[in-house]
Length: 615
Image (tube, rainbow, N blue to C red; front, side, top):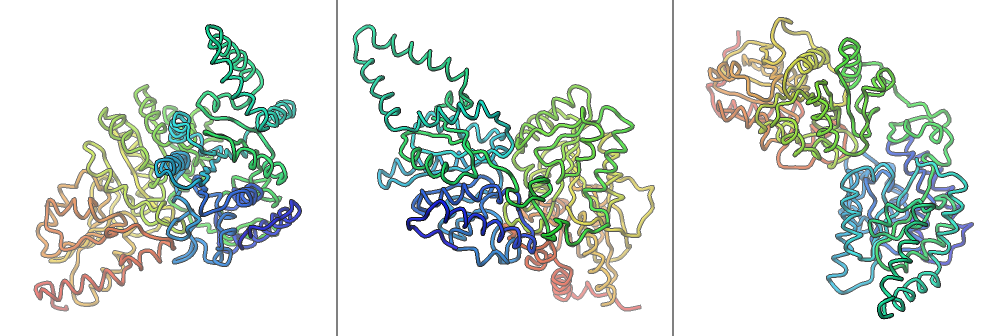
């Protein structure tokens, strides 16, 4: 589907909006994806593509949760059946996928900064007159980076349009009516021209010009503070327009035509309804933000596994701990559902803090809470924790504060592609002094690690995937949870498994045993600092293989290799894993049991000493 550049009527666009909503609901019910946010921007996207001409004009979609309609209108409707699948349509804007995607945006609050860069580059090239537009959600604008972008855009005074897609803020009818009236006055070319002419004439008057101008500005300032909802943006150097109804195509077209010709940075405030047009999603927009496959008629998910996930195990155990210890508090960055803190919020509302999309603030805020005598638990996706790297080092670890990092979605992550893979946390945490990094291989270990972390007088990070928690029969419970554990004794060959790669490791051990080898298997459990007892044990083996679901460079295997020779560290090589299920990603990048087994066998056959006699 492409929006042809012809004279289309408002009725045409409204019919198209209805068709797009029907398609989105049906298509995403089959593939899963981000539904409610995209249903909310249908008219806005149609209006933007009617007034502006991509790829000449550049639209930067913040996060990309709201870019599905944009993708449909730029020739990718036919690929929606492959959404979030291996080699399929990306769930976020991706310049390598289409020239209409002006900038890759998988994490939030980046669009204004990126769009400003595009606008200044346009100005410095002194060629072309393309329009640059950033579409930012009200959630994304809670991020500090968004305000850094706004601050610099206002100061740069370049032509830039920021569209604030607001699907949460409540504006009363009276305020809305006044704002619409002011908006009509301010977007009228006669008003804008008159304003510039008055400044020009008054500034030329000797003695009185400047004071009168300042007086007018002062009076205008009082008016703004009294009735104008966008005063914050005005003070940052933007001309503010709105709020306007984001589902009224006629109004959108009119205002976009007018602001297109306004010089300097402009912010257009648009009010939308998340889940618009699909009643079930409108009633539960949070539930339909990111969904798996579901039944269109009822909204119920197709498959609901009753098996516990690492997230649900963490959630339940943290509740138990918090019920006994009032010092425990929980912090997240706009992800209470995703990281399992919704029930904590309901049960302990005064001890729950959702700081919005502000990961750096979340970590430093937790440091302050810890300094004040509390036990903060920061629950965050691995890929989002990357954004708080300096805060972890500077504000938590250097001060040795007892902050617990519950790192969800660690390792390979299904569906969301390169921007959401949690493969870097081992590497970026392991070289930080004095932090403890743990990786449970089952749900029981996760609860014990959380117990330890909440009692430890220093920073502890626990990483785990979003998948169903495995159950394994093994070991005595008397072993310290912060030490590695031998799961099978052996000789000459040792396999060290990190976290949830244990199931894969068991599979490999069984195959090697059938081949006549006698491999040992260790559950690493502690990533940082290295387990000295494990290092001593590994020195007696001829072949040592480590298996982890993180990036190889700076990962666990390389850390062990600095103490004892590692034959091969199995991890993600120097890549950004693409879209696919966790199983598909392991197979694609050689981390499935079959691939690892074949590579180990090759190493062993190259050295006959690895072969043991069958008994």
